Image (cartoon, rainbow, N blue to C red; front, side, top):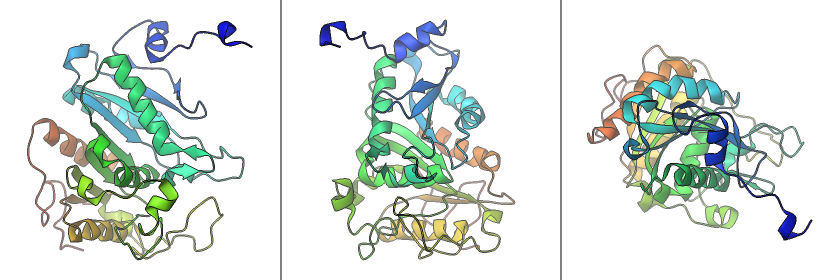
Length: 303
């Protein structure tokens, strides 16, 4: 097929129009432009017009890949803040090797999930004529792993970040290799971890108080496609998130740590704290001090 006979490329704007409306409500699932093996869906506040949209909110799913469930759960937040909400889908087993966790580590074989996300953002920005240079980012469980690692390498793209209940974390430890630390980040990712850039982002770490009940060991032997992090940051999700918060604090990076009383590893139970954090950014309230929690959390010193 010659270039002259190639079908004309259609983008997100045409997809939305084909669905019968330019703005408003939930979209169908759209193939990612850079890598159609991945996809995303949108929620657009019905009452808003294009000029009123404040920003993009990108929220990344966990290992169960319930991206449309997350879209529905965060739709009230998107309406309250006039955000266009984007929930990507990074499918499991893309390389036919049984790996369901590749996206958590930004790259897998020839796939660069961070670049796929950046291109999704670019396509949505074009469709909605966004001028805001940074977007708002969050992720739950495996998505929490993805999004804090994404921010390490692309902090200039993010204005606010909420990391919810990740199963493993990457500390700002230059004595350990990715993904337990950051020693060889530039070699593996082609760019260095930008610690200074992280200081410009509003940051939240959030986890359920009961998500740390008992030990939650990480596998010590993993396939080559799944980088090992071990248990260097702690025995369970609560301990690991506290270690991540401490690592950021040691590097002069302010962050809110929120341990939600009575909450388990359940996204629904964290949504109020996540929403409160993002709404505070819209209202231009300053981040919580290093040694206190949001109103829904426990003090940092409380175990």
